[in-house]
Amino acid sequence: MKVVVVSDNHGKMCLDSILLQHPDAELFVHCGDSEFPPSHLEGYAAVCGNNDYFDMFPSQLVVNIGNHRALIVHGHRFPSFNLKKALAKKASDHECDIVFYGHTHRFSEDEINGITLINPGSLRYNRDATSPCYAIVNITDEKIEVEKVEL
Image (cartoon, rainbow, N blue to C red; front, side, top):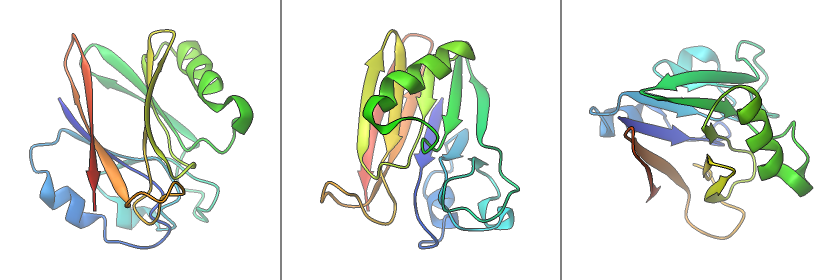
């Protein structure tokens, strides 16, 4: 299954263009800080970030992806000094083996205790001086492959 994961566009960039670029994707995820109303995020499983002013998004979502379960959060409600371990614990508590999260504006892929953590970076600007980006995640029963797509 192809999953497109975006985050932190902060009111910039039309998200419809990403939908159109990936007609073969089965799931689109937005990890928060869109700063858009829900009508601008149709087609996305979206959560609320710390800069979202529309209380119409949940703080977290759990979605089934084949034989996997994914937790979607923004990440701002977790301690920054221990963020990845805290996210892995939350995923474990929800019987998830994947976490999609944003907030840091840094692309990353990690594994902690059998849980894959994926941050797609920011569609607006990354704090590590890399180009704005998002992630394409190909998920099968056996493996999870993550590709960084730079804008």
